[in-house]
Image (cartoon, rainbow, N blue to C red; front, side, top):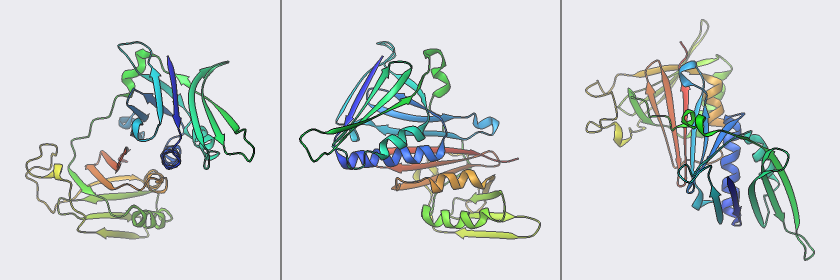
Length: 284
């Protein structure tokens, strides 16, 4: 089992750092799945048990100048590692003006991802700062626990408003309640609502548009034949939503949300070469 990769291009390095920062804001620990063409960061707290789910997918060719890996076996050419993303994020913070960053799976005293940052130096020799990030190697028999979550059979699918705007609204609501109701319909309307004994606040968004897969000919949705203006809703933990909105360092080119009434809210944030799915279970 071997893995080594190298980033030389500074823009790619900074972009990769932003992705890792976002993941570190969303998950204390996560699983890194490495394949020949992609990297996946996975958090699979069972959504059914009230946990958050995350699935972030990167195409390695868009980030790395060199990328070599040998999985656990020829027919299973993959590696699954458990790691604390904050540790990787910290290591990359030292690399903001680096000439190159090399990442390698090593096993001296315990399995580690070694991040070697080559910094520019005034003399002819370069300075190299090395970080060893402990990882756990996940055995083959457990891999099935980390499969891509299926897109739930949603009641409504809608594009999100500007995430910054949404974040400002949710931040204000956080002071009033621990939970909020998110509701939307197939008419491009979405509301964020708080109702407590003392106060009731609703923010309305309109003309957001609905993704094409939510259209009549798309079989993806269980919203078939429903009244376009009827709302699907779920009550969710405000902190979990804010974590997603505040953690965003990769400005998505497209952001959408699928609601399964009273069960789960599924967010999808897409950037040219990164896709992030985030599942927040509904509160009962």
